[in-house]
Image (tube, rainbow over all chains, first blue to last red; front, side):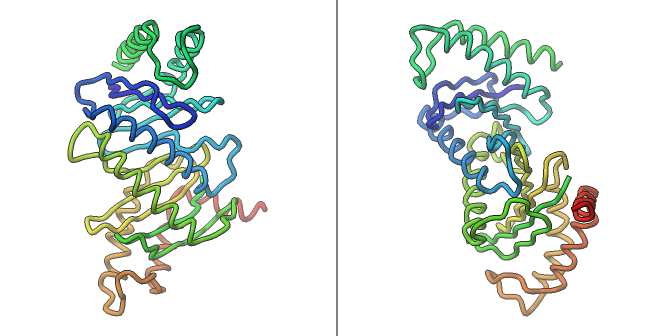
Length: 140
Length: 149
């Protein structure tokens, strides 16, 4: 079951946040901003800690804890899509790829959207909900 | 699948033990690397605690990047056991818990000569740690890598 989604721009600033479930952690908007920047820095340092050579140098892709898992996808331009879900959720990678497609179609191609600014596109929200529902249905 | 390295930190961030079995990318400065590792884990622990749907929860088990996985176990007293492996090994935080219970408690906690906060010099701890890690299924590749290179 999906819990929440964060979209982080290449500077580490939060540009979109959405909860998919009531059980997701309810935090203030400042907290979400802080969490997004923290994740951005943690990803950067995890690249330096790498004991082996990395071709792409993307940093953390997946975090597993006892109560949730977090999957992250970073595009070539540095935009990060981070989704949290309950531990048994499958196909998070595909869900993130689908989200990236939706981002390019409904956010980047929107002529009124400024790059790296908070996302306020209605169609993006609609399609995002549909994608989340489809993911829940295919999982059960 | 290879096992790269093992770190053991105490509550203050002192690295009590660092063991390395394979490290293709050499690090420039060992102390800086240990500090970075402790820092990342400290930040990640708070990050997970905040994001967790249930409180108390969000106990970090492992994270994966595109080339390595870091497995983590923290004891009730704040001792942090860290294992760096390649991807595909599954979750090894249970192995770290076994190392704590069977190796650390017996050879370090019960060692009357050990001073908390100092790095571990006990040969018994190091040899038991080595044999536990070498007994892991994912360690087999380390041997193959050595014999082919």
